Length: 269
Image 1: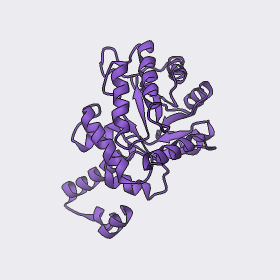
Image 2: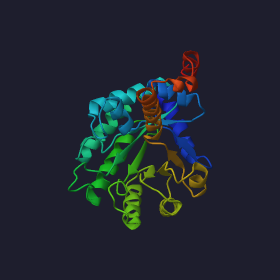
Image 3: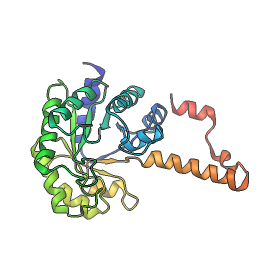
Image 4: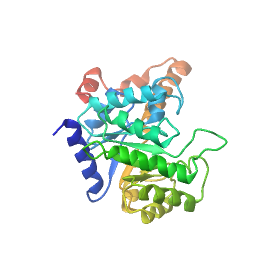
C-alpha cells in the first residue's frame, strides 16, 4: 500500500469515527510541521493563506501554483492533506475533473470544489451546473484506486445569500451528486450548523468563527471544523503587533515572548 493510499484511508476513517475533529490550515512547510506536532490528525490547505504568502489576495493564484502548494504541504508531514481548490480553476465540469486528477498526483487525499464563479455580477453557478461540476469531480476521484474525498462547497453565505433554504438545497444536491463532505463557509450560528447537519446524511464541515466553539459545533453534528485562514491571520496579527511596537515606541519587548530558535527547530522536527 502506498503512503498516499494509507493517508487516504486514515483521512476517510476520521470522517467515519464518532465525534468530530479540527482541521487546521497551514500556509507553508514550517507551519504544517508545527501543526502536525501539535496533535492534529489531518491538515488542509487554504487558498487565502497560500495567496497571502505570495503577496496576493484570495483567488489570485493559478492552478499550477495551487498544485505546487499542495505538493509542498502534502510532503511536509505524514498527515493526510485535503486541498482548497477554489472552483477547480475551471468553469466546465470536465475541466474540474481534470483538476481533481492533477491534484491527486501531488499527494493530497481530498479537495473541495466551490460553486463560486468569481464573477461579481453572477457569484454562484446555476445549481444544475454546480451539481454537474461536483458530480464529475466525484467520478474522477473514483478512478484513483483509493478514497479521495470530494467536498461539495457552496459559497452562498460568503456572497451574502442568507437564505438557509438555498444553502441546504445546494448542499443536498451536492450530496446526491456523490460529494463525500458538505461545506458552507460563513456559518455564524449554531442554529445554521444544526440546520445543515440535519439536512445531510454525509459529514458536514463548518469553518471556525469567533462566536462558535469546536465542542458546540461537534455536539451540533458537525464532523469537521476547519480553521481556514484564521491561523495564518493570527500569525499576521502577531507581526502587526510587533511592527507597531517597533514603529511607535522603538522597543522590542515582543521578542521576550517569542520562542527561541531551538524551540522553533524542535517544533518543526
